[in-house]
Structures are given as C-alpha cells and as structure tokens.
Length: 208
Image (cartoon, rainbow, N blue to C red; front, side, top):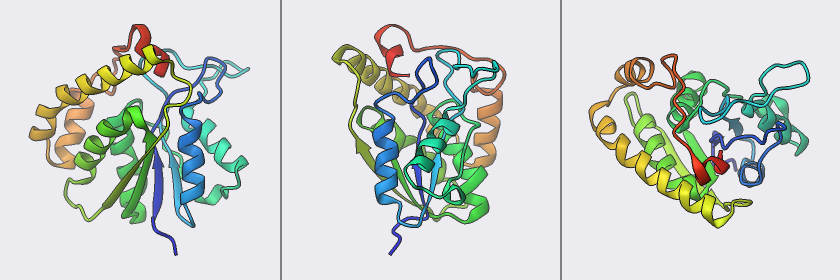
C-alpha cells in the first residue's frame, strides 16, 4: 500500500562542480526507499547564498535537476518525478511545491525528508504554508543524517536555522492565506522580488 501521494525533498545545495553534497544524498536515498508508488518532488533552483555552478555551456545547473537525475539513476521512473525548480529557500520550497504540484494534482498525503539540521524549520515552514486554506493536507516529516558537515559548519548552520525561524515567526502569525503569502513573497521577501541577499557567511556557508 502506498502511504504517501508524494515525497518532498527540500533543497540542500550543490558543490561548485554541480554535484550533490553528501548531506543531500541521504535525503534522496530515503525518498527512494519510502516512496512506494508516490511521486517524488526534488525542490530548489539553487541558493541565494552563493552563485550557481555552471555547465560546460555556461548555463546555471539547477539543483532540482541534479536531484532528479540521481533519482532516475536509482530507479525512480521519470513520470513519478515532479521537479520544482523555482525556489531558492525553504519558504519557496513549501510555496512552490504546493502551488505548482500539490494543489493542481490533488496530492494530499505528503512526506517531507530533509537533514537533521534543517528539520525543525522545515516542519514549521511547511506546516505554515500547507496549513493555509484550502487545507486538508496530511504532512509527515523525517530527518536523515547531516553527512559531510564538520562540527563548526554544523554548529553555525544550526544557529542560523534557529535565528531564521525566530525571525520568521511574526510573519507566520500575520500571513495566513495563500493570497497574503503570495503578496509577501513577491513584494517583501527579497529573494523573490528581484534581490538576492546572501546572509550565510563564515562556517555556515559550507552547508549550502
């Protein structure tokens, strides 16, 4: 029996050569194991924190495309993979996965797999976005290991996650509909209104 309609995999970054970093691979591998007949949704165009890697023709390499290729190599049929390549952060992962795939296809039982350092904010953000009317979604979450991150990078990223969630709390209280979220995302969130502020510096940058 298929437990989920889709397994969602938030973005986790790419290496400079366009390959997957070691903390993203376990997310994909877990999605392969638990998906059953569910769709798999790799998410993210990239990150605002550093320039995207380029292919041999000079075009940006999109993270979701690299993840989709990995899933196909692991035997997931191409018709079960739903790429979301619009987002550049966790909020965008949730918003675009909902409006591009979940709502149009009626996907309601959703399992979200991400790294342990990312799980608390992921649960909060996806619960917020998918809890807006019309709701009816059933979300579950699963954390996998933080493979490949040294202690300094992991500690810095964990602190950044806590700060980001605390900073988002007032917005989560104020923005309660998809219409309001759309307006906030494209008129107030700098990553989607034509600016790209990089806020990850120092050791935390190694986790993107």
